[in-house]
Image (cartoon, rainbow, N blue to C red; front, side, top):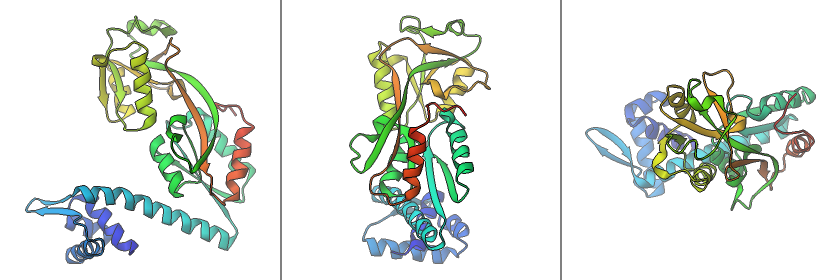
Length: 295
């Protein structure tokens, strides 16, 4: 399989244009078209629908796009590991989801790097589901993620870090902002703003909110947590999120949700087949720290 050809396909899929993809890959448009045709011939799969408006991924093309992204990331990670073995420098790629320094992760990693200057540490931010996917294919060494994302992933090893209640972010002038915690009855008439990411962790969070007594018609979904927080700040509803996601430097108030139905659990996970000695070292130091971490 030609990796340059794969990169050409991903550029075309991203831009929706052979011309723009060719510009991105620094080749001519006919060369780009040739690369895509050859890839379709090799796979014996039509990757794009073509018409006078441009190109669009077929259903098979969308499947291949996701797979090729993972393949390229895995290849680059394998190459990095091989280079590290060849030249004697360990490399550790760590993934997490959340805002900067969620749960004190950046502070902990900074301390780990200071204690191990011989090691190259790379930090990647991604959704919890994608972090588990990347661990499985070897594109990540280790990841902090929500525990429910580990279900059915037999290739991953993990241990739990901590659990916490969920809370609601709301406008500072909201009548509920004066409380430390609220009950389901107090928010029965509120619009609940939620991220609709198709992950096990987000689906479980929404399911727990339903089970706490909130009604489905109260919910309004958006693509990103940052969008729901902006909507909450402008008085369009209240946003449910884990307590460790609280951002004190934004114009929002936070109240804990007083129910046993809604909590989140977080774990440190890695691929059980890893041969990177840095993983064992990092896991040992994480296991000895208190989480959420405070330097």
